[in-house]
Structure formats: C-alpha cells, structure tokens
Image (cartoon, rainbow, N blue to C red; front, side, top):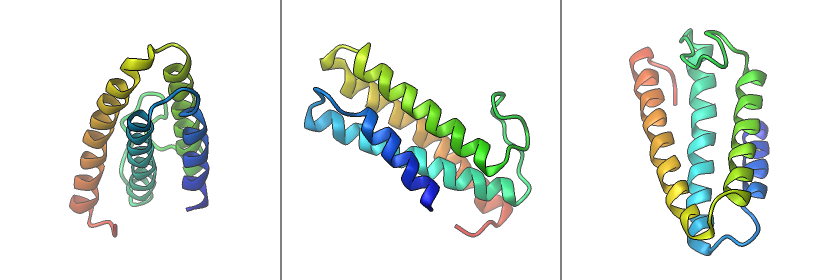
Length: 118
C-alpha cells in the first residue's frame, strides 16, 4: 500500500500549475485508475498470470511494475502540464482515464477467472 501512495504523490504533483478544478478531477480519476492497475497487476502476477506489456516482460517483479507506473504517470503528467493547451487537458485526462479503466476491467476479470482475492 505504501507504494501506491508514492504513485499518487508523484502523479498528483504532475497535475499542478494552471489546471482547472475539473482537469484536476480528471487527473485524480486517472491516478486512481493507475493505482488500481498496479494493485491488480501485482496480485495477478503473484497468482501466476503473465504480463502482456512488451516494456515489462512476461514476469516483472513488484518493484518493476511500480517503477514503470511511477515513471510513466509522472512523464505523462509532465507532458500534459507543459505541452498540452490548457483547454484540452481535461479531454486528454478523461480519455486516458477511460483507456485505463478498460485495462482495469481486464485485470479485474483476470482476477475473477484466476480466483484471486480482491
């Protein structure tokens, strides 16, 4: 759990600057979906699942999964904060949240099929 707090901290810090309240809300939703992804990925890998990400390999360790998410989420937040137009950040965060929720639902279904405790 302490690792998920680190992910939240890194990602939340990347959602600063001139963000509107709605944009920060979408950023928070995306971060929550990222944390859920980390937790479910680690649980399913510990139960014997195979990771499908070409960046992580088929059997990454917990530290690798967490580092991948922290770095990726931090870089994404930095990109959204510096390279995106102010009025399009909310749409980008909403789209990213939707894509991440798709991954999360897949992880959840895998957990159910593998009978992993949630």
